[in-house]
Length: 208
Image 1: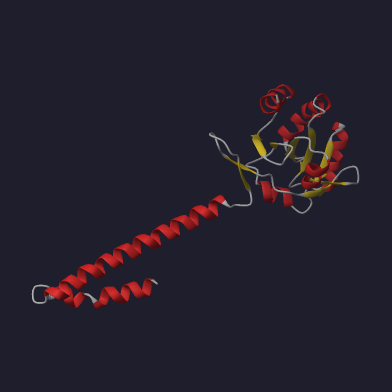
Image 2: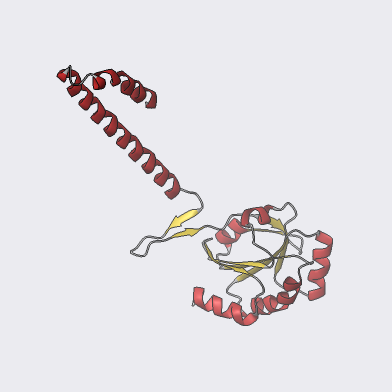
């Protein structure tokens, strides 16, 4: 389509230069110029609408209807092996359990991770209405397991052996925590160490 428009523009250069000698040619030039302008405008509108439609149809977004409509990000699904010999799948949890999730990404070599884990464990016992899972990332299974057993963690622990979780969630650093609603929407990201008190405040804010 753009080639056709360019060809038409090249064809109308000669009449434009001879407008004073050929009034009919000048009139044709004006009509053609208007056609080119209207065609450009129409193409620009089509491209703009296509980009907007693509952005609005992204699989990772959920539009919340209402006067204060906003777009929220769905938590990427993942499946990881767990310390108790089973597996944890986010989609399965949402379908079968439905509780909100507090997910903590950590590593045994991360000192703030070590400092906050007892507080997270205590919070998991107080807030049983929320599912807790800690996932070891960028770590070896042996070192992560040794640390979990040293601390005596009682909530679910997973191992990101294939870097799936780290690749999908891309934490800015460790520790990194995510509060996820029962239908899989990321409500809040937390980068840095948490305490039992700070978690209680955040849960109250999101879940009442």
